[in-house]
Image (cartoon, rainbow, N blue to C red; front, top):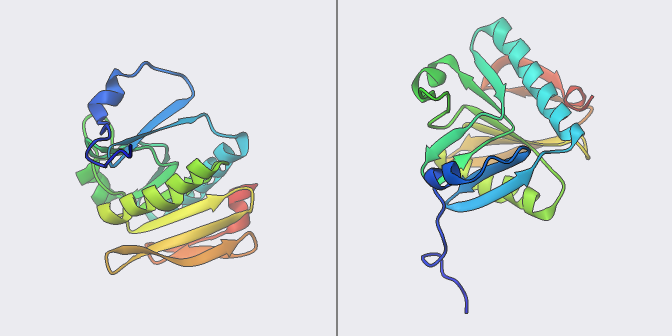
Length: 189
């Protein structure tokens, strides 16, 4: 018997709060579906750190916003994710940060670093792409430390559209981040 969408369990933020603390396990909910992942590979974490450092150095020089690693983003009770890296303008941060220090809406830029595995890639390339597009993220980067490339999606006509796949010898810049330019290879050192 096939389970219909209305029959399946829809997880909420409250449900996650009731789960036992488990060091190294990350819980996310997308459209009511629970995703659990283990602590990522060393190179995954280094890539997250390098991207955050590049964004934060530019942010401090420009004064336009802030970057951080693995913030909680609570779009709703059934859409609660922990992106690898986000950047938000100071104006958006002033509106989005709640008292618990979580974002309650879309940051300007979200970066996910791919982890090995079909389910992990499907989540980042499909479920999260759809979620971030529907919630108003302006730009979405998917970084792959194994292939040393970055896919850049930008908001066009209420969608996030793939506009470039950049390789390690390419430069990444963005109209969202005026004056930001970085060799993609710097993300993967």
